[in-house]
Image 1 (cartoon, rainbow, N blue to C red):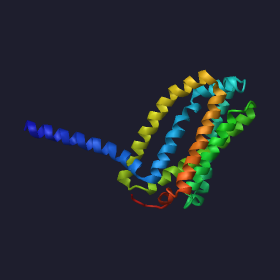
Image 2: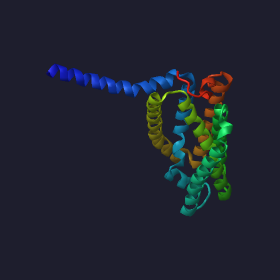
Image 3: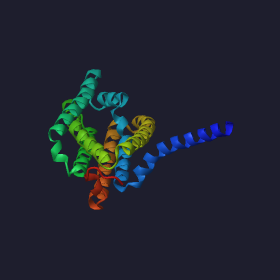
Image 4: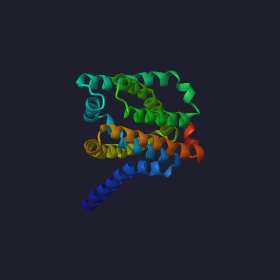
Length: 226
C-alpha cells in the first residue's frame, strides 16, 4: 500500500511537470510562435518604462511638470488603449489574413512613438504620443493573441499561454530592477530612447523572420495544429 501510494505521488508529480513544460516545448518548437515569444520577451524588458516611478521621473525631469501631468500622461495612455481596442474591434475583419502585417506594423509604430517620446519636452505633444500608442499596442496585441489561438487546440492553448505568461513575467520582474538602475545611471530620457530602439529592433526581427523568411505563414490560418 505504501509503495502504491508513493508510486501514485511520483506519477502525479510527473504529470504536473509534463503539463507545465508542454507549453514551453510547443512555444519553442513552433517556428512562428518562437519568433513571437522572442519579440514578446524583448518588449517585456522595456515594459517597465510605464510603471509609476519611471513615468513620474519623466514628467518631472523631461517635461518639467508635477504630479498633475503625471496623472494626465497615465490617463492618456489608458485612454489610448481603450480607443485602440474600439478601433481594432471596429476594423477586425481587415486583420483576417493579414495578422503578421498588422502585428508588425503595431509593434513598429509603438517603438517609433516610444523613441520620439524620449525626445519630447512639450507636455501636450507627450500626451498626444501616449494617446497614439494605445491603438498601436492593441493592434499588435490582438494580432498576437489571434495567432496563438490559430495554432493550438483548446487544451494546448491554455498551456501555451501559461508558459508565455510565465516567461514574460520573469523578464518583467528582472526589468523592474534593470530599468530602475538605468534611469538613475543614464537619465530617464535615454531610457525611453533606448527602449524605443529595442522595440523597433523587435519589429525588424519579426519582419525578417515572419515575412521575409516566411516563418509566419501558418500563423495566419485558423484551426491549425502543429
